[in-house]
Image 1: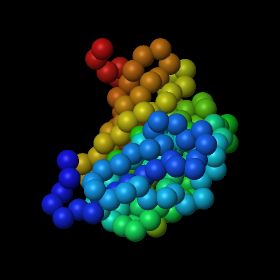
Image 2 (image 1 turned 180 degrees about the vertical axis):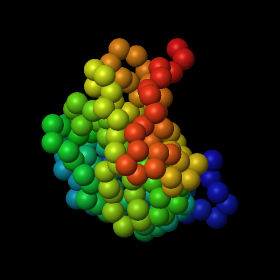
Image 3 (image 1 turned 30 degrees about the vertical axis):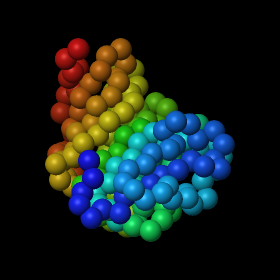
Image 4 (image 1 turned 45 degrees about the horizontal axis):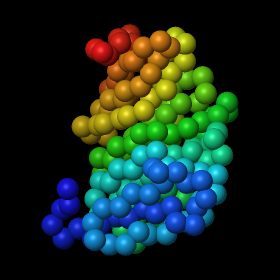
Length: 178
């Protein structure tokens, strides 16, 4: 769905060997915008826009490091993103505003949650699930209330990513209905 007057946001993998199917997405009538320097060993898994001037695309570089590019209304720019040791990959992203977004994935042994503060991506305390875990999707109602879904051990799980006050424990994990 396009908003009236929106210029459109384009993301293209042209010239990026190995970018994969998720590496190309396009909405609106504007042509795809060339990405900033993104290694050929990278691919994208998710994209979300808060407006025609603020979007984020997330993915993986070399199979083990996080990749985030930001759209500012005129072009894409790669931004620094935390990549915890042990291999880190990003799969889902949601955007609330230009100053608030969430990204989820995994670190090889546990779930990974990042939050955009308007200037930088920061690690968010993430639950260590029995048997490991990967988060694939995220949605949010505001900057401090996000929900993520993913895989934990031998079953699916639904967790709250942003409602716990700083320093508190996350609620017990419950399998989602099948």
